[in-house]
Structure formats: C-alpha cells, structure tokens
Length: 243
Image: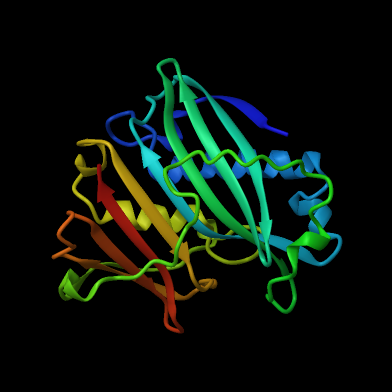
C-alpha cells in the first residue's frame, strides 16, 4: 500500500530564505512513516505496548529542489519489504512541478529495554510491500570516510538539550541532520541539486556533549564528509554530494 500525506510547508521548518530545511524535511518524512505504520498497527504506540520501538538507521536523499514556505506538497511513502533486521521504506516529496525530493531509508525494530534489534519479519504482516525504488540506489551501503578526505576540523560542539530528544529518549534523527547543515555556509545546500546520505550508528543520550567534525578535503567528486561523536562513540556519519 502506498500512503500519502498532504502538507502545507510551515515557516518553523524553513530557513532564513523561507525554504524547507533538510531537518524539516526529515521531520515530515518521519511523520508520514509513522502515520503509515499506525495504519498497519505498527506505529509507536502499538509497538511500545509490546516493549518495542522503531529506530532509523540510514537515509539517502536525492534533492532536485526544496519547496518554499506555504507551498502545499504531497509526501508519498511505501514499504520496499524487509531483509533480516532491516525494513526498507522509500519516499517522494511532490510539489506543483513534480517530484522534488526522493529518499530511501533503512529501519529496525528494537527492544525498548535491551536496545537490541529484533528479527523484523515477525512484525511485518500487515504492510503491503512494493519493489519501486524512489532514488538512484536500491541498496544503502555503509558510509565510509575515504583516507584522502583529509584531516577533519571541529565545526560544532554543544550539549544535548531535552528538546532534542524523541520518544525513545535519545537524540532525534532530524537533529543530527540539523547539526550537519549548520556547519555549511548559509546558501550552500540551496546552491544546486545535491544528494545527502546519513548513517545513524549509535544513540546519543540526554546531557551528553556532541562534536561535529568536517573533512575539508572531501574527495575527487566534491563530496563533503561529516562525523558526529558523543563521549562514548561515533554516533553518525554523513556525506553531502553535488549532482
């Protein structure tokens, strides 16, 4: 089953140029994914009653353009099935000109107490899957920072605040995306179409401090790499790729 939401872009998800931000887009996609899961009795409330929760692992965006404040858009999402621990979900953001952004994602279901991933096929009985791939990548490989990306510099350091947490009591995925894009010049994400990949490796907890490192050299294709760490581990790797 394909699921759609119609959304009028609110100004609180936009940047200083009145354009939807990447972290705002991530929030909209998470919301639509939640609505679709609820319709199949796999939403947060239904899972938490069973001591389980959804966790987002990888996201890959292909951005042609971002809609502006007050534009009405359609978020279209569907399941691409499962494989072992992972559930695959794709998205399209559609504006008056057609498909503006596509996104492919990997998710797992964890046990809320142990934080361990569960075999997902046991829960995947009420969602119809479709093979359509929204982006140009059928598989989302693990992110790696190449050796020739150069030495990183610390672009941002800050403490985790309660407003950054979600209902699993760790930092919401969209916050990491906000931190990455906060390390860019104000116009950089809107300068041209781009692709963006992010992998969530470890959770960040309340009152921890995070540091965002940027690899200034990038690679021969012009990709910029980012690493977000907390005191215990590397939490996130990300890559911003020109098109």
